[in-house]
Image 1 (tube, rainbow, N blue to C red):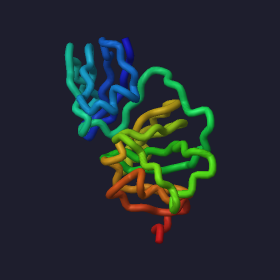
Image 2 (cartoon, rainbow, N blue to C red):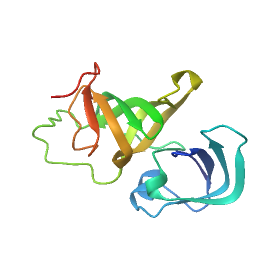
Image 3 (cartoon, rainbow, N blue to C red):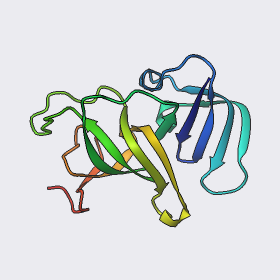
Image 4 (cartoon, helix red, strand yellow):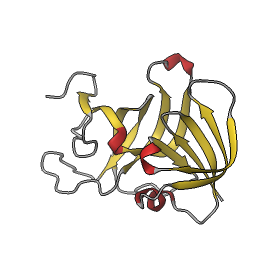
Length: 170
């Protein structure tokens, strides 16, 4: 069984995927994730909600963490700060060595983008605590704001872009 932790607009859901499941392929198939023995920890507070089965649709998933996965071997990692739903997400995004966003022909193929050294907190309550994970996949279509040292417009369509220093990207 693979343990999965999903950050949604309503809170954090954790549970087990019973069938054999590879995180990247499972997210890319856009069929959703069925969790067994799932627990929802609501953002609004209150008691955790437990259920035997829960289905999470791809559009509900803002950020997904799971068991160990293989990271790219030959990659250049760029610091990013993202806002998706109620969460502020910081981490590092891989690109191929020599990646030039102005000339790049390749685009991300699916809805989820890999990050490593991930830290997640509530954007409007940074003092509420932080969750740290070694890696995660962020749903690039749910990202509303991006601060990075390179132009990632092709990665996060519809997002507002800032420089790493927090100034609007021109």
